[in-house]
Image 1 (cartoon, rainbow, N blue to C red):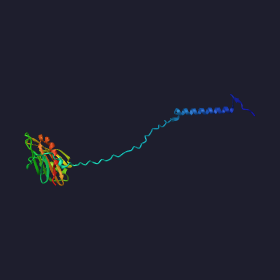
Image 2: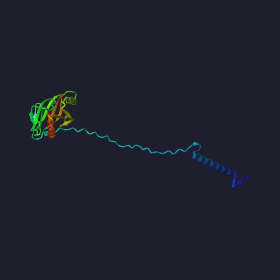
Image 3: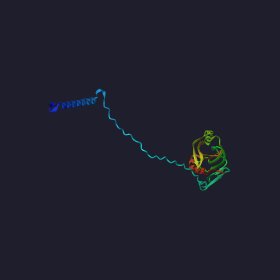
Length: 233
């Protein structure tokens, strides 16, 4: 058997295998360099970034509990009457005032919004030209509501009187409309505080009138007096 010749200590087959491996390695190096350098217009895409996505977590939610609206409890009528006040009464209404207020028949130049039922006059200071007045009057409701009735009523007042304030109030748990009039007579300024109540189809007016310099001194008395007004049943 003829033996293969050896070159550098290797046979011809071994040299051929080694040469093949070397060629394959060079080809791999060439292909890798071509890709890295962007050969043929191809570029390596950046590795995708894994952006964390927040996951919703279940949070317990409690619906607010509806609180019932507080119901105003009226104060017993007898507790609304200050000591030493005097009752004034007709067949239809009653009201309480300090004993200085006396019954009279004329409302003078006060704003008259209905048929007079009760007129009282009070003692004033020496600097006052006109007496204080408390006037109770009534009339039938005209229109679809009390607001509409009053809007029409006040629009027909004389030009020397104006409504400076109007608001909805509660008088010892009874709904009412509060009107504040300003007027000027004989160069004297007057303020008239009028509370309006609706009783079925009847509109009731309770007015307190005084010269402006005395009105605000008497205002706490007027606001206490209106709480004692009630319709006689």
